[in-house]
Structure formats: C-alpha cells, structure tokens
Amino acid sequence: MSDQRPRLGTIGIWAGELDGCPAAEVREAAAVIEDLGFGTLWFPEVAGREAMAQAGILLSRTRRIVVAAGGADIYARDAVTTAAAQRTLEEAFPGRFLLGLWDSHPSLAEDVRGHRFGPRVPTMRAYLDALDTAPFGPPASGASPPRVLAALDHGMLALAAERTWGATLLGMPVDHTRNARAVLGPAPLLAVTQLCVLGPDRKSTAELARATAAAALPNRRALLNGLGYEDPDSLGDGLVDAIVAHGTAEDIARRVHEHLDAGAGHVSLHLVTSTPHSPPLRQWRELAAHLLPVLPGRAARAS
Image 1 (cartoon, one colour):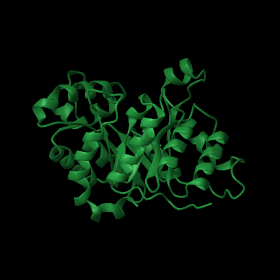
Image 2: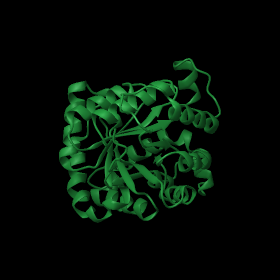
Image 3: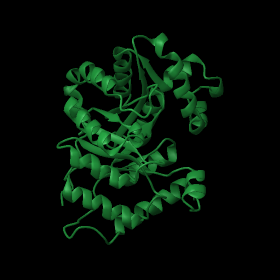
C-alpha cells in the first residue's frame, strides 16, 4: 500500500451541496471539478451520505483529483471501521483519498447518533490511538495513511500538529489562519476552506453573504471574540466580509491570496448560492478561469 501523501494542489473545491443531489449529478459534478483543474474535492459528513461511501463514488468517477472527506464524523463509525475503510480506499486509489476527522456536535452525536458526546480533544486523541492500532484492512495494509483534523481552537490544532498530517479550517477570517499556522508550526498542512458568494459586484452578493455568515456564527463566537470582534451577533459589515469572501472573482481571488500569505498551504472554495441543492457549475468555471492559471508556482506549498 502506498503511504504517499496526497498532492492537494493549491486550490480546491468544498462541495457541500452534493449531499442534496442525486448520485448521477454527484458523479458529473466531480468530473467537472477535476476537468477544470482544481486539485482537491472536499466534502463534509453531517446528515447526508456516509463519508466513505461518498468518497468511493467520487473516486470512481475521477482519475487524478484528490478526494478529501473534510470532516468524517468520529461518532458515525468506530475507529476500526474507519481505519479499514481508509486503508481500502488507499489500496484502490493510491494517494487520492485524504481522511479528515471531525469531532461532531453534542446534539448530532447524542440525539441523532445515540452516543455520549465526550470532551473534544481527549475523545479525538483516543480515536487516533484506536486508528493507529486497528487490526483490519487489505492484506497489504501498512501504516495508517495520512489524515488531518478539522480544527478551529488551539487544543485541536495542537493535537493535529502532534498526531496528524495537519489541520483543516472552515469559515474563519484570515487572522485565524495566521494564528493557526503559529500553533501548527511550519511543517504541517494547513488547509483553509473559504466561504464565498460570487456575483457581478459586492452589492449584489451582500445579502447572501450576511445570511451565510449568520449560519456560520454559532460555532465561532468565542474564536471571533478572540480575534477582536467584540459583538459578533451584530454581524457588522466588517465581520461578514471577514467570514465570507463575496463579490467578483477578483474579490474572491484576493482572499485566497491573503490566506496563502497568512500561512495556508491549500485553500478550498465553498461557493454558496441561492440554489443550495444544485452544484454551482457556472461559478466553479468562472473561478477556475480566473484563479487556476495564475497559481502554479504555489503548488509546492500544498504538496
């Protein structure tokens, strides 16, 4: 089995809307993202498709692109099952699957999945221990393939630096990227997902950007306070702009460069639209045309 780290490229797509699409549309969207030249296709695991099955669908329809479970829920399957699934996908698609682990929410873990929600960092540490010692997988399984942690606070970032390839961040300002790099140190991967709304100008995208920031706020209040946003609930223009890159492709590209300059090695774009259950093919094409030709020199930072 290959233990080669996936080559993520510099720019990826976070395709959270795929959970609301039929499987045929999911496969088509994956092929479009790959053909446009994006390096990695990220997806979440919340209440839609099971993460490992979704990864298999996406990998089987594509040829080169890395497929990343941006947040496989650790309460969705025990560590032995997760290890066996990751090793199976690595055997079938060497170097093309990245496992990102997410520590869930209390209501999802307890009310939906029927587990007891444990303290975040100790529970994740124990899960990583169990992954490392899991006995199951293909006959040629060796050491655990690379994995990353969905991390926002200092404790999870420190654990990511200690025990994994790195960390993923979603929906935070550039200042948080800079702080996360300081916690991780220079070597680990730092993959940032940027919420964005694409339109002809910032005025036309302002309303959807504000709604997107409001939806992201509950899990980020304390962190935003620490970054100097004293009243996040007021959703002032400065905070909305910091969380959601909105406006033209040039506006979004500017934010991508800011994250890279702040220490990110990879940035994925989470396009939010007024039709959340339809893949934003037009927007992906527009951003690819604007972003991908100008960034080849940065690819080594994310490989």
